[in-house]
Figure 1 (cartoon, helix red, strand yellow):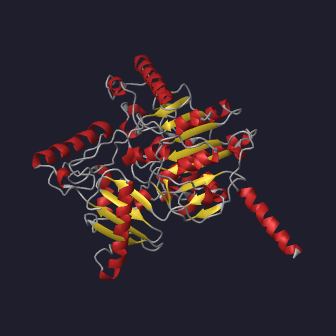
Figure 2 (figure 1 turned 90 degrees about the vertical axis):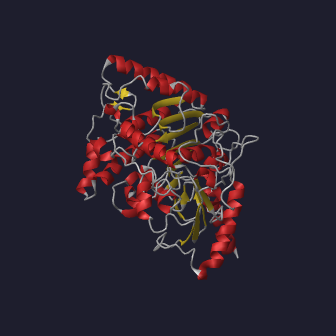
Figure 3 (figure 1 turned 60 degrees about the vertical axis):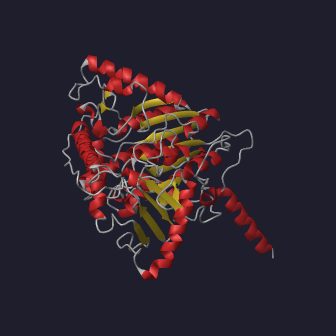
Length: 527
């Protein structure tokens, strides 16, 4: 009997050791670091496919909780960031308006955070946290940003003193904007994709620049709780392997006086991967990994690691599914790391990027603001090992598609509303607009295809983002109803919606879709 009682006591003590800490009114609130990477493929994570050397990300997965069934509710940059920083579906964006008489919310790159009241940085600042942003924003601009950008010629030389002076003015404008968005600290930032940068000579990644911005912010706030949003540009276009060979002084805001040395040289990082037999792009993932490692080591050096919650989320999948509701676009690796405070291991629970805001607020014991809408669920029951799941299904939205995902099944619906069907004249104009944008911003020629079928984003033939999706899923892409059995061996290789033996499952998933659409703003098809 005594042994039984002792075993129970030991089990209770072990459980308590991993439980979310509760404030005693005197201890310092935990710090929060949210790391959001960009367009990573599964091959860029060493611990997933073994095709890259990423020991620091591997460590986050091993010593933290690896969320293997994490989903971005929308699989492109802007709405994914919107959701991560608000806990809301992107279709709830204040400035997004429903389309046509059907009132369908067409979520694309149209969900800025500028006018949102309840965002994570604003909530954290109001709760007494020092807040910082480093890296890629891609969620809106200062009012006169575009006007200033248009004063540059894309072939201007950033080393020219006159050009450098204008870049300094842009930086000041950006800092003022970020202060309005709830950030006390804004350094080493970029407002969009580097491949579309308004100066050709600055279209390169600079992970060292971001790493230093993060380290400096942490160093400035060792005595008070802080919230840091670090959003890298790696591994997005432009080709990271090309940036490895670029001038290390080049940043989105101009040239540095000298290269930054807060992490191993980028060329050395790439060589490690190449020496191990990995590809050029996969080897560049080691450059990103070195930056993440430098930040974790800095937290440890300052004695802050055990009081810092680190959340890692790649903005969306990029394995020929970006911009879609397919698994290769919406399913994306995520980790939660907090030494000594959460139980390490892998969880296959369904998780959405809506869930990180309530998770962070619970960890910091910050109440949700009155009147705030939050679509997420706190992940603490999973992180402390008390529950295996917090939701029965995940929901994804983009363009004129929606998807509901359960543990074993997925239903994807493709519905273009009649009012969104363009005329012939409109088709030509849309195709030429897409072509012109890519030529001006990315020096790429994209064929104009006005007579092609409408994609799920409403463009004839699709924008270039959709081309890999159209090619990979060409047999089922245009099917209005798509049902897939999700198993490790088979993901979305065969549409089962038309199979009589799966009729009952299809109706069950359609019923779940109706429930999901009720939770979202606007309408969608017949649901």
